[in-house]
Length: 249
Image (cartoon, rainbow, N blue to C red):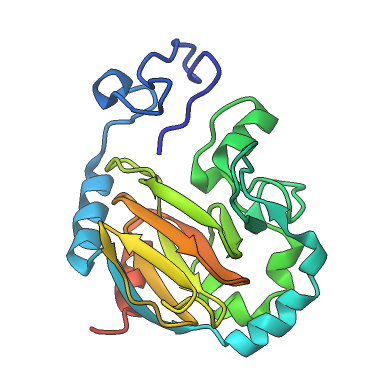
């Protein structure tokens, strides 16, 4: 997803490629907010595309251990991009943020940009928070990569949702994403993840490579439906690591 600054891109060029409704004119944005892909981008994206777009990985989170560990942080959840006049019960906490972040900082790119005054790449947001160290149930997955970009835990309660959207849909994205479902109530009884216009089956505890360049949305009609969102720096080595982590090989 491209994010609109108030007036200017980091280059100093006035933004005129994002309409008030959020529609993006990628032709106008090329070279400014939309970098041209290089050979590494092409290699990595072709290989990731060969895997699929919602691919189960071998890593399983122990949901019982996770529930026990996260209980100590019950009073630390913060609203995720709350909008005045819109009912949307969703919250989050940061595992990997910016230097000095608490678990309630840097949840969304618009919030980060407002704080620092410029647009950042996902890979620039790479400092573990105290929550990272307090969640050993997640460490086998988190520690599979030498460094991580912006990484968070998202909780949807009854009535929580994310609208249809794409995240960083261009070939030159700096990170790709792994999503893991940390609580038991992430199956169709209480939660729905629609990806590329199809509802996807989810195994509680399972981690997935998810091609978030494609349209996806979520909805929840229960409480405490929690998933982990990891931004993985897009290097050839990390792509090969994900290939080595697939459940079916």
